[in-house]
Image 1: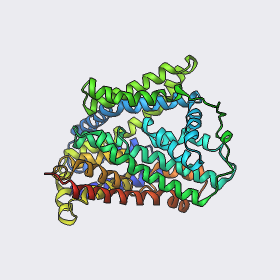
Image 2: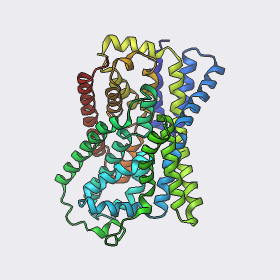
Image 3: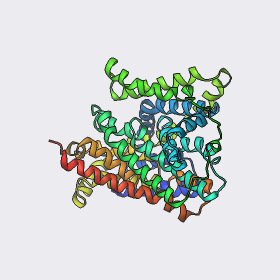
Image 4: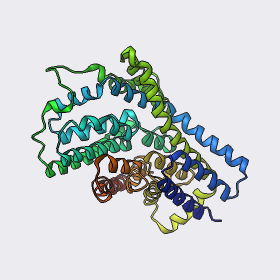
Length: 419
């Protein structure tokens, strides 16, 4: 059977089975990997070896960063440092919509998972107001901000995967100088929209759940973030680390700082909670690694390249492929990895500016965040809104952001083509 048809069947099956039976992504992705391998005629022994190799490749590159991010987040949460961070941000970001969106954005990056940031911040946001509509809008801002932080800012599992696959020597600084302002523009537009919908003037400082002492800056709460930032130039300039080494270095440095500054009575419990959460995230992504590796080892990349090259402009291919994969399984991290695995075996990356290619994939990965996206249903449960409202407030903005991101990528490719 044609590998493209098998790919479509497997992706649809992953989507339907995952949605219908609420299975963890690890099971649907591993099942999809095994099914794809067997359906294209690979012998069972090779299929299971490829599954293991695919899982191992993901754990090797992203295991420590995801663990570190989860541990940092749990230590902050266990000690009430999240409220302190929000309190500090309140001195700069006076309006609750701005505070909610930016807090989601900032907390998501080191935690490497938007849902982790959402779970940490939602209890804090619920202190802001008793008005259900206002609280709901602020919760959506946290969600959108956290998604944008993980999707656009280097280093996260989404962006690191693209660097590793296509341009290991490309400057993260150059990338972030474009991606961060672009993502902040998006969250800024959402903040403006929410402020137009409601008046938040009735929300006072004390309603954040933590009473700030005048003139206080909570250094212990910010310490892991500050160390991560300071570790970047140290890793580049003093240690001459590659992208792969730098990501491990800065996240380990942040995790050690979180452990060192934590109270002794929560050091063990914070570690256990962080490791437990990280394990779920890591193994879900390892499932994506298994599926991606088996697809990469097949003739699918070549078959898909021939088909799409004959029906789509080459500069549309990465965007559409990422959108299809995202629609099928719902995770941006998985989409980034699978798209990179498929494209890496084609000539397309050599024809596109790396920055443009990164943004094309990121834009496609944010295009359809709907029924297969676990975040969609988390918002549905948390806010109590119906599916139509969640689609309007969560999915539609990301469709617009994805299209704008793709257009920016096209402009970069036009102005700075690969020579």
